[in-house]
Length: 241
Picture 1 (tube, rainbow, N blue to C red):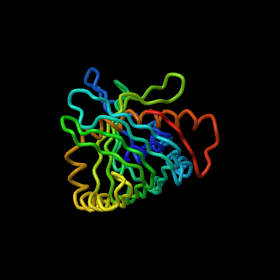
Picture 2 (picture 1 turned 90 degrees about the vertical axis):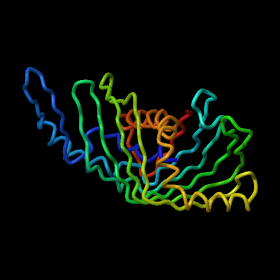
Picture 3 (picture 1 turned 180 degrees about the horizontal axis):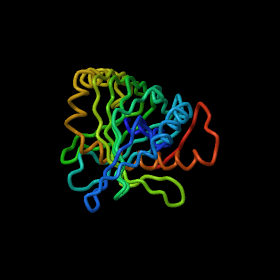
Picture 4 (picture 1 turned 60 degrees about the vertical axis):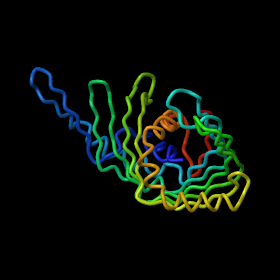
């Protein structure tokens, strides 16, 4: 669910109060402050165009059965609605001109999410099934996302080889429909409310493996559309994984 958080931010690759990178060639330090005016003038200009709320009609997730995988199977999120994206802050951002690598930290004070879901999953190496059809509401506070990506300026702006790590200060869940059983859904809801911070911290590799390709696809679609159409306050995007 966190993969939606950073999508709209990449519409402006220069989001930050500063950008800095060092190129040490023949012991010469290059600091291209020429970009600073552009960055400062675009950051607030793009922020109002970030969808608020962000709506995604359908998002299909496939968990491939391969070595190291924790989950196998498929899940679908639909009617996904997220508030809080415009409130992001970027405490740090750096750009390495060699390799065109962008590294940044995004901070979201609060994120509210609602989605319908359908799940048909198997925990790898066990007979445990995770299935059901229902809906999920989540409130996250103090969300921090570390992102690295390679910037491609060929034929426009796009990102490649994106990786992300996510940390949350707190989270509150409301879950319905898991195992098509409300009593069990309530039990899992309680566990999530008590353990969400630890669960996210201990599964960074899985989170990045699952979400990074989806985030990259969403970012590139929005970047492409940003230069072709006028963004409205509500945007619906359908992106197959």
